[in-house]
Each structure stands twice: as C-alpha cells, then as structure tokens.
Image (cartoon, rainbow, N blue to C red; front, top):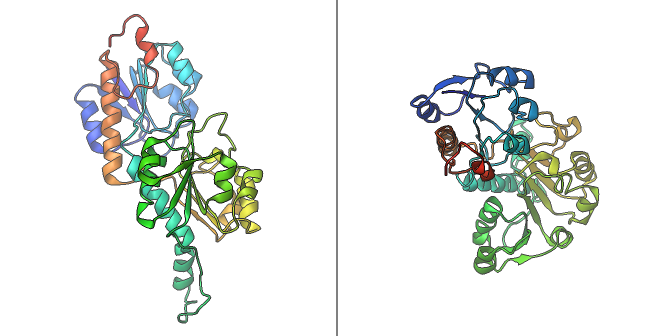
Length: 327
C-alpha cells in the first residue's frame, strides 16, 4: 500500500509507516495547495495530513481507492468528515497526547501578557532600561485571581488544574459539568456572560464549529474587565480578530495572548502593531516530546485503518458498519 504525508513529521513516525507501506512525503517545506494535494493523493491508499491541509470533498474524492485519513492534530475542522464518512473512509486524530503541552503554552502566554515579558524584553534590548522605577512596566498578579475556562475538555481542564498553585477561583463554560474541576478546585459552571464579567483571565479551549465561530466578538469583549487578559490556543476564528484589535487599541482589556489566528497564517497588520498582545506561531503542541508522540499516534492510526481495523482514535466509527471493514 502507498501513503502520502503532507509535511515532514518527526522521524519515528515516518519510520513506523515505512515498515508497513510505501511512503511519499511532501518535498516542500510549506503547506501544499489544494491542487497539489489532490494530485499527490492520487494512487495512494492512505493520507496523513496536518491541520493546515484543506482536506475537503474534492481532495477526498480525488482518489477512488483512498482508504484512510489520519490527522496529525487533535482538531479536525480542516477535514470534511461528512464526505469521508459517505465514502466509508475512517478519519482519526491525535487527542490526549498534546493536552498538557498545549495547556502549558496557554499558561506561558498568560504569564507573558500579564507580566509584559515580551514588551519588557524589547524595552531592555533597546537600551531604554535606566534603572528600577516604581511605575515601570506594571502588570497583573495571578494569586487569588479568577480564571475563566471556555470549554472544559481535556486541555481546558489541564489549564484549570494548573491554577491550583496560585489559589485561583475557577469558572468554566461547557455543555456538561466537569466533576474533576468541581471536586478538585471547587470550580463553578456558569454562563459565558458571567464568566466574561467575573474572570481576570479567560482561556479559550472549545473546538471550531458553526456555533463557536466568533464566539468572542465585540459584545463579549465589552463584558470583560479592563484588567482582564484573553488567551486563545484553540482556533483563530473563535475570536473576531478585528473586534479584539479594537478592544486592545482602546485598552478595554489589559491584553491578549494568541497562538492561533482568524485567517491563519495571515495576521492582521493592526494586530501586529500592538504592544499589549503576545503572538505565537501556532506552537501549542510544539515540543520535541509531544510532536514525536503525535507522529507515532498518527502513524498507528493510519496503519490500523489500512489494515482493516478500527484506528485507536477514529472519529467516525460509523464507517465500520460498511461492508469490507472489521472491528
């Protein structure tokens, strides 16, 4: 069998795939265009893709014998899962393995914004530091503050649990009660409006869906405290980027930390010009250990699917009711 990998991934993942299949990897160190991807998938049995790849209906139907799609990410909003399911193609992701790593980045962004780390680094490097001053580069405290978690799934829960050392109060929004947070942190499940109104720090951890697109817009930003900080390590379009720029420029909130962007990889120029926002190049899972674990998990999913078994992290298991598959 032949598989196509849309970008070079850590070597252990490729080695695992090459033990089983004929593997072709995108030779360019960039995201492939849709046209390139449609051509590359032809003649392939399996596809290992990234969250940056537009795996839509056209790509899925470009190769009649495509049997499996493995995503090298926990999110899969870039994949037309419905079309894949119609064709009987299993789709998998890499959940769990990147939970703590992404949660750690959320905290890194929170620290950086609250204590103005990036701004202070630039200030110091520019030779502007002339000595300690009582009003120099004032930021925000963490201890005894309120942390708001929008989406208390794996990553949101991990972010909340890490607040314990700061004796923070935790509020969260989710479709269900989070027993771990309720028990361990005495957290409180509240409506979004209450969370925004009461939280000192707001961290976003919901998937991108039609319902969560622009979940945080101008109205929601106005609900936040002027001293509040917004962190987004989920998906860019969950936040109305222009509304956020306006809120930051007008100092209606203290600051923001972003790892994702509405029109990624493009970033609004007026966002780049602001000092009260810290910008990361989508590195939520970006550690040596985690990216390697993701590569191995994606490879294991792909191998299982192409061998006719249910991948460990299959997100559309209903395809296995179709003829030709076994559980």
